[in-house]
Length: 256
Image (cartoon, rainbow, N blue to C red; front, top):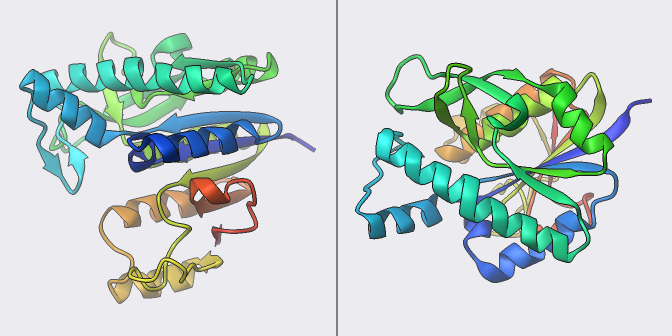
């Protein structure tokens, strides 16, 4: 049996609220065994960008990454937010290291082919041996969504897809659980009712909810990546909130 690995992607709306961030970090620190953290934080980047005079254009809530925006995202994600997570985790005796995909050649990407989102990447290769080396040494990687193209250029990657692609690459080596952690308790049957969590979401029900326009916008991307991960050997995908991470029978469990 393979070792268990938990890959957690945390939403920027958690990162940007101090109380929720600390709740999340405490819950993440309590996860047993090997683990890896991927984070986002668009609002924080936009706020800093506004102060620097860098206006970020969005398409479907995703940034159009021009030269100035890429520098901003690299600075905020690869610097400020990464070090914030590492320092908080060290406070819980979790030996974390902040990295980007360019470090140790961990994630190589290519630019999205249509070019509409600028220097936004899609994963081409994951250095599974490099990630395993860190994990086997008891180090917890805190991965900023900045990758590289192998030719000296940085790229920004959408985090839900990044988590799924890394999980897929590592699925032959580990039994993987992905946790998508955001501000709700799971996928909601009624978006206006925070308690209407769908405990188990199967592909047929997901399609029906999309057709009824109950699941839409950016959440479609999250669930498409979740189902793709299940299709490629990931054992379990859970969508939940920070306060529920210590009890993973809660939230929404994705099934094929």
